[in-house]
Length: 140
Length: 146
Image 1 (spheres, helix red, strand yellow):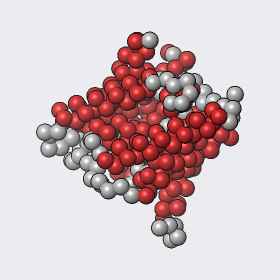
Image 2 (tube, chains in turn purple, green):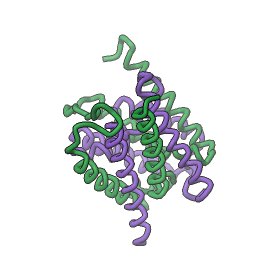
Image 3 (cartoon, rainbow over the protein chains, first blue to last red):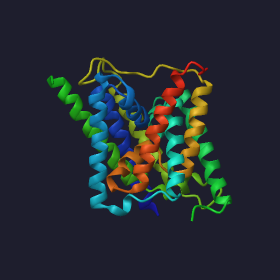
């Protein structure tokens, strides 16, 4: 349906706008895994803006869950699978210096070769993982 | 707190909120939709390609508009990424991240946003990802690390 694609495009544009606002205001790249990871161990000087950014995400998430609960749905695997996935995502994004936002949105917008290589790699392993799960019978 | 510091904090809060609203609108907080996007050989849902397209186009244009500035509004300098080399750490990290993404359909931004739903799965994911991040740091700092 056309409107589905338009909403997706608009949602994406908001993400790009927010990334631009963080760059214009603070001169920082909107890479969520880096913001999250540096919040855990980074220097105290950079902690305030990172906390504020994550707080903004959480407040918007709570508001979205109240206004449109159907827009926030559960992950299909059992909780043990979700935990393994979380471990891999946390470890991998820090090792690889970024995720879908830092390498995907921000890196591709900067025409970064490193980010393009990272995006192609995680799209490939993500796609293979989904295919393996499907061939093994899926989560349900 | 200085005025610039307060402005920076407020700007970061707004940017985080708008980012999360974008993720929700885009469908990124629906893991089944994300997994369907990655399932190119199955019942492929191409919608999320439009999300990435919209985000990159908007940010590409935004970066061009900001490009002439010597400094950001509320900070001393732009923290510009400078590395251009491809190394094993980058590719291995991206590969490991992709496997986790393909298992649960959560990447970091949507997972943090989904905490707002109060769902157990989002909480478990965020907790486990935090542990994964700390493990990576421990591995990086250990003497046997390459």
